[in-house]
Image (cartoon, rainbow over all chains, first blue to last red; front, side, top):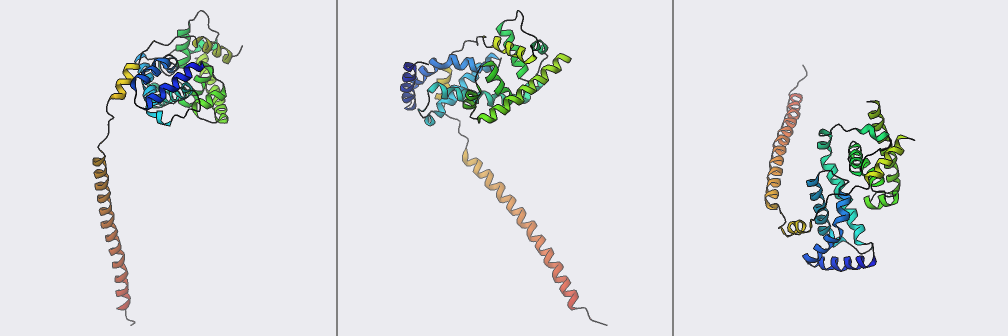
Length: 184
Length: 87
């Protein structure tokens, strides 16, 4: 992110704290693309997705008094996005367990062949959906977002050791699920 | 090639997916302008106080009766003991 965007963010954050709605509108316009991309990892439902993106910006606005300019605004916003998405999964964990459909998850044990990105995302999403939210979050950030363990620790607020352990366990669980699908 | 390597290939392909376009600025600002829903705090305080008072009353009645029955046994035993005469 360029220095210019950071400076503009700082100015708009200052103005937003003083109740300037237009300034916050500009912040939303600048960051909603990235946030929408991230929140699409948390749901495949368009209506829920739009609501999640809104929730992130509402939560961020309500947390603005606690924002200290120690890191770029976008980093802080992405932390809020991850927490909002994680909370959404935790709320929906029972519903999604009930509504799980049959997907061709055994395809995941072979290399993709002629599939497009949307099909791949759909399959990976539904494979990860079978994990508990904590495991799912680590693997989503690691595999789908391409974050390092350090970055995941920063985004989630968990310790690096905890993220490593969680990632290892989550991988083992997912492997087991994929193995079961192959046997089926 | 392991299953995990294949899964990572799928994940790498999935990363290229574009999310649906969304413009939430107006909706967010609208939500922020809505008056915050504040629950009626005094109702909650009254409900809590009433429930606490009822619970305290029940405990007091049960406790007092238990205490009386305990004392009754004790005095009864004292009385029996005092009125007991050796033949």
